[in-house]
Length: 153
Image 1 (cartoon, one colour):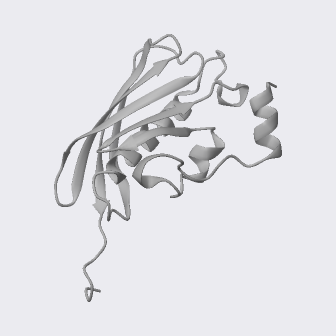
Image 2: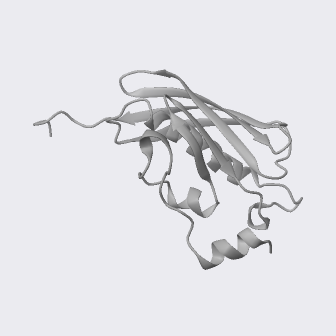
């Protein structure tokens, strides 16, 4: 077990975003448990990272596709939340991932909102490993949940 694995077992990971307009807002507990950290988040874009740990490995010793999918989904969700200062939250409608190479080492996801309407946003994401090799590409749509105007139930 490496040092990060030991640390994660002893102390809970940070549960809030520390950068950009979302600073202080919560990150999903499962994403935090995976060690996902928000590096950048603003103007419909986000950069998230996830450390390679033994708990995330599959039987072949590379990062499990489910962990990569969570990194992708989290990155696009956070990018979506930055498009409107009043955005309460967003929910994944669909998620399509193409794995192009095994995830070896720490991973970085870069997501961008390509279009946002009144109730749906469309996003793209790339995941790369420490060497810069492409690990996965993804597209997703998100249901936008904006605050209701005063007096609307």
